[in-house]
Length: 72
Image 1 (tube, rainbow, N blue to C red):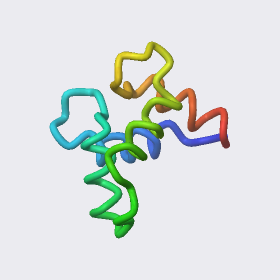
Image 2 (spheres, rainbow, N blue to C red):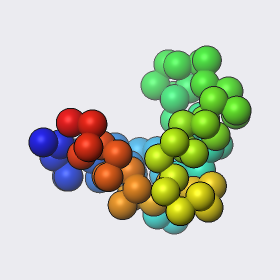
Image 3 (cartoon, rainbow, N blue to C red):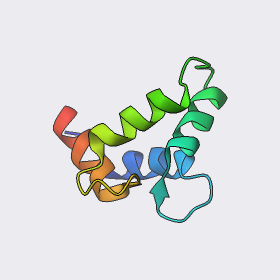
């Protein structure tokens, strides 16, 4: 099972403005900072969209955690 504290830390690294949501731009920028320059805006939107259960275009921690804990 995934560790919720580690998941929270990871989420916060991606949530650049600290508003409690990860946007496609924040995701893409974080991936670039991690050395993955291949995550375009459309790829980032697809990744966020795959976890965005309420389809608002934003990834909340609850949505992130649901995905992470299910994948672990």
